[in-house]
Image 1 (cartoon, rainbow, N blue to C red):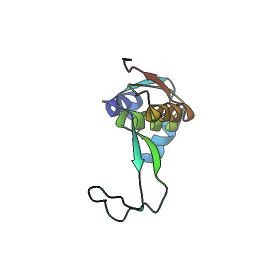
Image 2: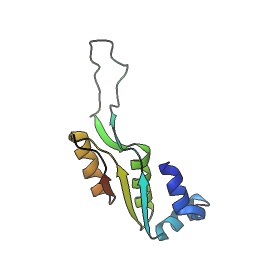
Image 3: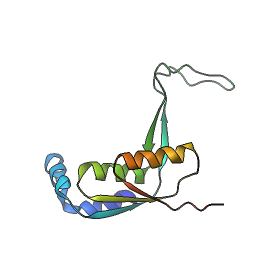
Image 4: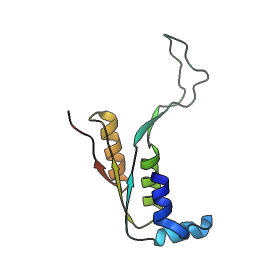
Length: 118
């Protein structure tokens, strides 16, 4: 759904990669993206997956990245254009949710959290 919204929003301006990026930078307006936001946990340098009740050594630091189709779409749309982007999603009240809120703010995306409190 999020990708379709961006396709409609940016529309015919994205014909070729070079012209598309230039056109997207000139795009203005305000766009809303609705959908998921996840934290991707990247553990590179793991030679093999650990077995049951065991660990595996990661030779590189474990990284957290903002992910999920709607979050990725929002971040890329904002990076490619001068437009305002709002992401409508539901985030947890935990460290991962806080990470996603910080990452969206740092990269210029307004995040509207629609999670229900219990």
